[in-house]
Amino acid sequence: MTRRLALGAGVCAALVCLAGPPQVLAQRAQGAPSSAPFLWGGDAEGGAPFVEADPKDPTRVVGLDVDIATLVAHALGREPQFVQITFTSLDQSAARGDFSLGLSGIEDTPARRHALAATIPYYEFREVLTVRAADRPRFRTLADLGGRKVATLGGTIAYELLLAAQRDHGIAAVSYDDDVHPYADLANGRVDAVLLDNVLAERSMRKVSGLYTNPDAVAVNHYIGILGPADTGLRDRIDDILRAAMRDGRLEAILRRWNVWNADQPPFFAHVLANAPVGGTPIPETTPVSAIEMTRRYLPSLLTASLVTLALSCLSMALAVLCGAGIAIGRVYGGAALRLVLTAYVEVMRGTPILLQLFVIYYGLAAVVRLPAFVAALIGLGLNYAAYESEIYRGALEAVPRGQLEAARVLGFSTGQTLRLIRGPQAFRFALAPMTNDFVAMLKDSSLVSVLTVMELTKQTQIFATNLGSWVIPGALCAGLYLAMSLPLAHLARRLEAAWQAPTAS
Image 1 (cartoon, rainbow, N blue to C red):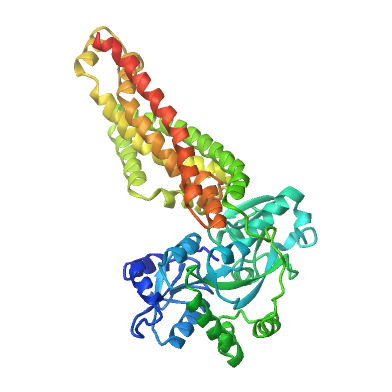
Image 2: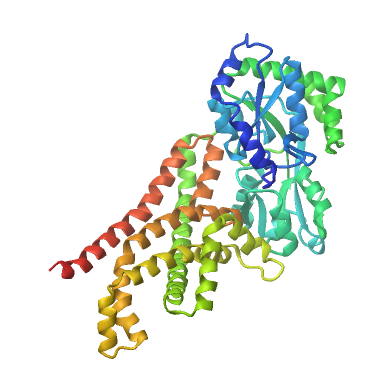
């Protein structure tokens, strides 16, 4: 469930290359050789206590789900082999056969059980509300947070609960991609509360001071393993292994090893072993919803997110054009020192990832200035693209024939007049086509700002796809909306180019 950006991501991504769907398909056969590795999928970016890179040896992963996968694999007479899968893609990867078993703090939902072969639950967790210690008397329930910002992870039960509270109490649900920054932003005052699993809340309380977690559960649910929908035979064998581990204490030992064993687990284990329904709080959607109905529900959110994407891209492009033009003019007309500084800026912005720049602006500068997420995203995209725009404008300025500049000097034009009346307009015409291309690229790169909690089109599509269990419809809608935004601009740019080139041709 957790989404922490950690060292294990890069290492574990390399492990994916060692496995693939053909190996898993071979394992599905009941007579698979005991020497075949048992491929299991998870997300090492999630971090402790589920799956994370071993601090002592980053080439291997550790965590309670790692131990459970090892327990299952050994009971099947195989050796476990980890496959790194982004958390939001685990359901789709299970369905297509990228691994035999998915474990990564995966929540038990009706939609997930309808689409996949799900194991029996192996852990009971509570969705709990965390606030700043000073706000403890005021904010005890979601109803107390009307009009306030409450953070959680996208595509989770907690997110669905917040959407329901958003309708009922006017809460502003803020979606994150990891479980670290919600609590950091809570401490910094960017959000007013965090709703997440008690496992994550307890861990974050140890790392971030000044917070308080209400022990009362907003909802109760369970972690499960997932398999492909046709893997019911293997699922039943894994269920037997998990029940045996509950009876003989092996599962309890794993949970104690990772400090997540609590008073909720003994009665939960007893219900599972008795084949009785486990206790829990129903989430807002209690029955599977058809793809058409879910599309109808999410379409307004996708359209709203499209407007956010378009507004962010237009404003960021305006900033990039202004700053890029200034940088280009400085590099063409400025002195040696100014040119050196501007060149260094361009190389730094082009040579470092835009995702890193966004993190630095939003999180790195939080101690100095706490920018709103949208403003930080606008500045990050604008300053990054300003470096690329400046190179376009510099090239366009230098493409104006020298003869025209000499003629302007002879006629007594000042440097500013030459730039404004002669060189600038021609350079803008030369730069129009690559500018349009950059704007389309910015529309797509705006998807990166979801890491700053901006709910743009791609982020909303990802949440839709996670809850639907398929990327077909969400992906098609997302692509259509991006095309609807980018194609008219490209058409307008072509018309402008044709109009400006016509006098020259005549």
